[in-house]
Image (cartoon, rainbow, N blue to C red; front, top):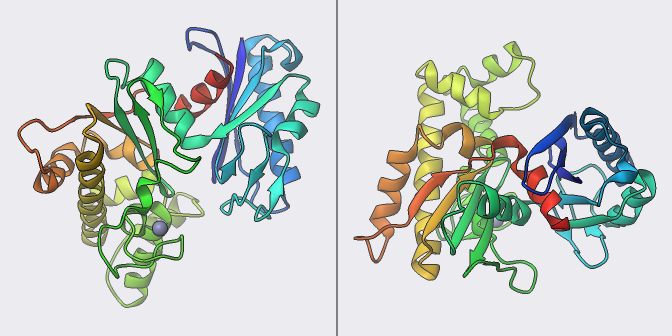
Length: 315
Ligand SMILES: [Zn+2]
């Protein structure tokens, strides 16, 4: 049995996973919104202990605990730097070492999106392919690459599909640059644009729905409710996101010619099937070789994909 922890900007998901990828126990905690890296590590250790308890094991009995982390995660040292969507995490923190002491098991730290891509490749929607792009559409837009059956990390920063430019001089991206895919499709950027338009006087129920359901932000569930109600502003922002996704993903496909694109992430999993046709239509406009487009599949491991992928750091 191995542990896997997916450290996200909004939640921490922990799971105990066997060698075949079956989940024996899981636990979920909100990511602390204040404090610093040590508080986040504490919440991660608590979630892992609960998942272990649910699986009937002690964390010290686990073969190891893998972590999928945002920011710059150094696999060799377990140090995570510049995880800017986590509280007080602008600098470096020895996440691997801290968790290892707290859990009594070896810990390995990897990039969150890359481990989720590897999980889909090994156990999920990408099993039948040898070259694929994982696109994780959520808070931001992350990407992971498998080329000829092997993860492609470049010099450590490959797969940043969210920062492929879809419009020169375009909308401001949370990364500080302009015109990135994430500036149009990332949940944070979409919420900022919705707020701006709402304040300008455009009608929308998005923020009413957010309050009614007690959410601190426009979650994928709130976007879905708004679409179901025919909210025009929500529709136009989702259309804009799909247009940007189709453009950016098609550009990546033109470069790599993969067999498949696996669409995951909070928004990707929720809207993948619903928006598959407009997304593939939009991609089709930009594919240089358009007679044999890659398969586009929705990630099949769902919410647990990140934690399962993290556990694979010990396979
Ligand atoms: Zn960017």
